[in-house]
Amino acid sequence: MNSLSAPREALLACVLLICAFGTPAQASTSSQTTPQATLTAFYHWYLEELAKNRDPLTNDRAKIEGYVSKGLIREIDKIIKSPDGLEEDYFISAQDYMKDWSSHIVVSDVQIKGKTASAIVTLGATKESTWRLALNLINEGDGWKISKVNAGHA
Image (cartoon, rainbow, N blue to C red; front, side, top):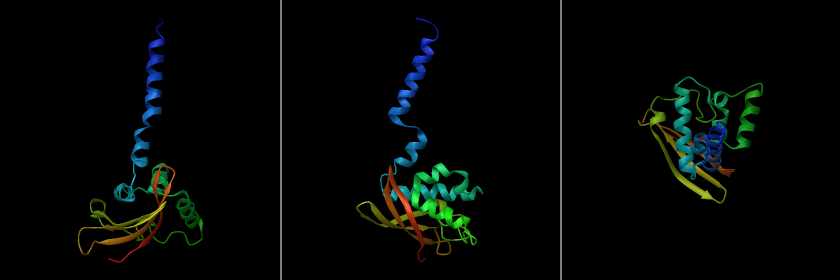
């Protein structure tokens, strides 16, 4: 046996494991098998990114694509490039966020009808910080993806 066959065998084993189980990044977004799991994971990540002064739409496009439908991404890109641009953050329907939103995310009133779903996301822990959003999702590719966000009522 030559000295190069052991590293090749180890490399082949690693490649086979990755093909069989996927990468950790794939698992984090594609394992969102319910609308509730998708929305909870998305808003926790998204709000944490905002708290770090990062723009999730531009800084982590691959992660956004794991949670948001292709059609909605195209729509947001079109709005951003328009003369008026986005007047508020699309995913929170507001210009700013409250500090307790990322740690207080409640998904309720989930209704699934075939490949579409709707839900209410309530952010915040106090009467002053509570913010509600009405969302639509579609089952696209590897799981549930956000297809529309509307401001709800507090």
